[in-house]
Structure formats: structure tokens, C-alpha cells
Image 1 (cartoon, rainbow, N blue to C red):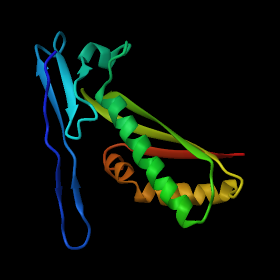
Image 2 (cartoon, rainbow, N blue to C red):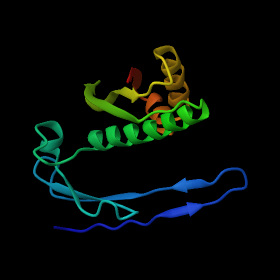
Image 3 (cartoon, one colour):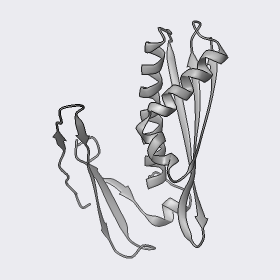
Length: 162
């Protein structure tokens, strides 16, 4: 199994730190019959297998760029919402963010057409109206929502539990 390596860089500016993260994919073979391996600069992922047939069909233990995008959006949104809840002095036991990213064929090419975010917050200190406002704030502050929104529809929904 080939290994791929990547480097991690952090640069600083006067106003806000610039954070640069990296990932590398090595690919061998054709699109239909080849395979790739993904590694992250942090070392958290060292050799994650990728194939196109698994991307378009049943994953069978393989991941895809869309699944990685969904996990990225879910992680980013969870952090953004936790920050918004803290700023509102709203206590919570747990928040769970699930993201479904949809890949469709558009004008003869593959395109991410939506990222649907579902949120459940276990909290007795907020009601649905407060959560809706906090979701809007979190969405505006989530860098992944901003990035995805430029090319795809992003929907956000949430429920208060507890």
C-alpha cells in the first residue's frame, strides 16, 4: 500500500492567524480501475484508500471526497455552533451535527449540489426560536458553510432535545 506524505504550515499575520492545512492523495491506474490513498499533513490520516467505483457505488469501507466534505462541514459547523451557544450563555449537554453532501451530474459533469446540515442539541436552556437564531449565526461563521455555499445549496435545520 503506497504511503503519501504532506506537510503542515502555519503562517501568522498581524490581524488574524492564517491557518493552512494540507492533504495529499497519491493515485495509480485509470479512474475506473485505479486506486488512491489519502494522507493528511497532521498525520491523523496516513493512508486512507479511495476508488472511483466505491465513490459512485456502495462504499464497502472506502471513503469518498463527498464523505470527507460532509465530515469537514459537520465538524466545522459543530465548532461554530458550540461557539455561538457559549456566546449566548446557553448550556448544553451535547450537540450532534450530521451532514449529507449530494453529488449529482450537472451539465455533463459531477458537481456537489447540496450540503444538508441537521443538528440536535441536548439543552434545557434554549427553545426552538433561540436555536434557530443560533443556527443562523453558526452558519454565517462556519468557514465550510461559506465555502460550500458559493457552489452548492446549504440547508440548516435543528431541534432542541431535553
